[in-house]
Length: 451
Image (cartoon, rainbow, N blue to C red; front, side, top):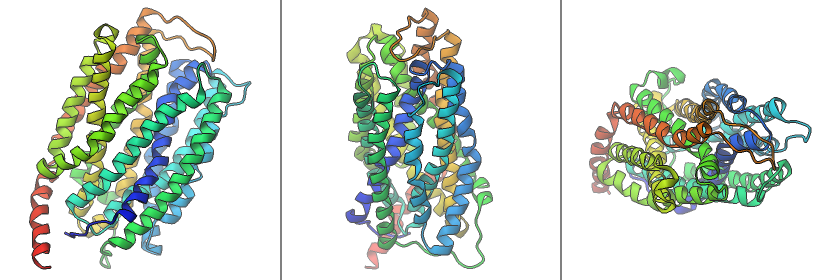
């Protein structure tokens, strides 16, 4: 195991690439369902399908992109060409929010769905290769956590800023044109950050080149699929991804229909993301002291507790609700940091076959993440439809029936609590971390003694 310490001149630009990724994940994740139901008059069940079906293709696309990324690494020695192609995702991002004025309802949903399909394909080209980087490097257990810690801080800050900036740029009572202006501004930031991220990947590869696979070792999707530790970790993370994307999609509804003020959406997002930024370095220390698995399980338990507090609704008072959202944010930091730094641990444990299959591993991983991004809002849209939620157009203010308000409230709180409990049960089946954490200090000490 290598004891290389990555330089800041490589870490910082690598992490900066996550700004663009954060914008892509955040803005559609938080606002696209609301954009469909409350701006374009798309019924909740149709809006949910418009977000779900395009992401079903990711189950196939992401692993396929992973194989292409592995082939690029084997042939050219790097994955950056595919990342550069992925930067075109900015065009799809703008198109999602540039819906022609004569489209409403189902036709508008089709427009958004087509743009989302294109965007997901392009984004996967960047994301899969980007997240394969830690496995490509000659670094150890704790340095992987440090690397992903930098990345996690930056992407969480970008999610916070995008979540606050998007509604601010769109303005009060926005229309489609306001959302288009928002997409153009954030799209420009997104493109610049992704290009900087490619520079960071190149510097990391030069600072800590990995060991080339020996001749005769072949990788592929089957290596990842047969890896029990990877399957368990991915199943738990899929459940977490569904939960977190549901929560993000539900925030605008909870602010408007339970708390009574749509402007509180930005407050809830800030209360969620700010603690995630501040506590990420602490979670890095927790991982170093207690191990990634223990830290992750603790964070998941904190999330369940916070969700149950939120279920009390407006009657609990805004300060308590904001504190509960902050609890979710603290847990969110660990649930992003720990699993992403555990994936390269799994790849390293798989030996040479795992090393040459890093893109396939991350392709399957990001497919799970993308599936969570689709299923989460869809589950919430089912809750809204079951409660009788009434869709509307921009400028139209509809009084929702009591069942719809209850669906908004409990879909945001109790449903995530149940899902996260399932994730905890799945995560407890992961057993690699204890061995990896025990081996890391001794290996590092041996290398230090040889210096």
